[in-house]
Length: 421
Image 1 (cartoon, rainbow, N blue to C red):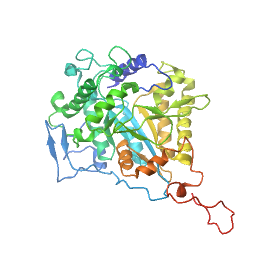
Image 2 (image 1 turned 180 degrees about the horizontal axis):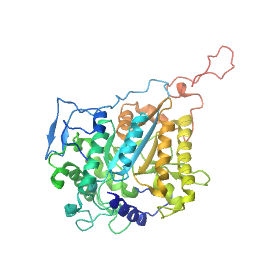
Image 3 (image 1 turned 90 degrees about the vertical axis):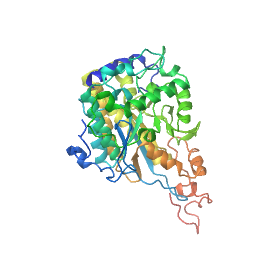
Image 4 (image 1 turned 30 degrees about the vertical axis):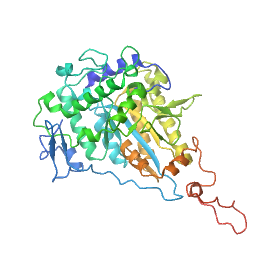
């Protein structure tokens, strides 16, 4: 996969068009034989294991570690949600997937991993992929090898058992003109999604690794959301996604405000956060920080690596603080398992996870958990939350704002109760 990553970097950078707004986006032998890492994960329910298709996936019961969403009580302050998500998730020689699984567990967090389907397809079977508007076997991020697929399967299995979400980043990552995803029709998006699913559901057939343990979920049911390559093609993708039963899309760009449904899907865009030392705000994604620091050079001036990572960390933390102390809008962050500029952005993300995920009232969750929570809220409460602008806390406090009751009298008025936030 390391070679695949190098292909991905060059191809994606060549295709990216708008800055700062454009985003870029070894298994066990069986359930009875687990690696040391697997033994630490929550086991799948032992009474329900039903293989699906060729045994690449299996139904194993409800996903472990998913909290039951609760509706806000009248006047209750919303929790601060933070979503860390990964585009093109796969495990290669850098072992960043396994590393951030560990970081998440240590900080009471779950995340969303947007798997690229071609990372489950060996190079020798590349012609099985028939991308819309391109010749068979074409991919701007390459394919994988047996070792990389086995390693990715293990990480996907463990991640799901720990309560993380497995989404999709589709397949060939085509951006820009001449067949890029922004030009695809609704029917072509449906075809791309079907192929992404098939590569996950048939990895055993394509690799010949028949004796490996299956992924412990039904991908047709697990897959409920995505982020499009380079944040392109959102309009037709969301039409296809709605018809296929998806629940959310995170391919847009917006300010730090509360989300709403669009075309039947929760619209959970990447957000603009402060960019330290700059006059503009920056998309909360590692790739975009990099492009605004070292341009298309993925390994820029080593003397500036630490500074660039600090800028990303501090920008994300500034975005977090203004939401946490303000409107409490969920903070959406996107990343890639890459070592751009010496890995400084991976260090920045890790420091943000450690700083925010253990704070009071903070929930670092997957997109699935966020939409589960949004689905059970009073629509009137969500509508009211959407009236708050970036960083704006209710002037009379949360208790009054979400209770529907009259605002309390100002402090100091004789006989008035103390106002509470």
